[in-house]
Length: 85
Image 1 (cartoon, rainbow, N blue to C red):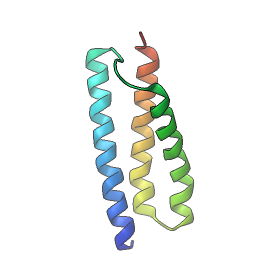
Image 2: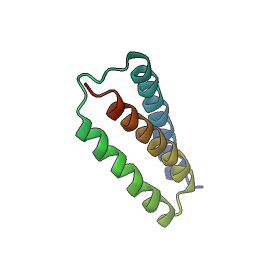
Image 3: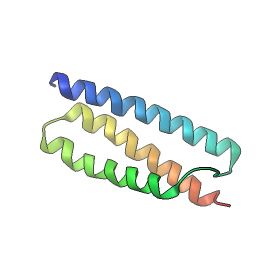
Image 4: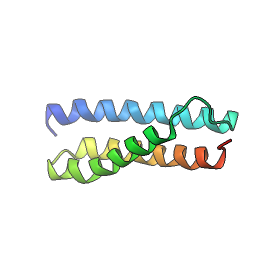
């Protein structure tokens, strides 16, 4: 693992923690308000791209953390669809 991969993985990891917190908040409130659904779809699709891109660069730490990002984004999108008003 190189230094740049480690730093990027840390950003991805903290992003996954933040998205997990959004999932918890959405589960508790069961309301989607003030969020652009399209932006979450865009960033989730970017996350899927990263699951291809990081291994092509040999950035396995970023890939691992990026997997968490995609997982929690998909959870959030599913709940947002379910709780849409």
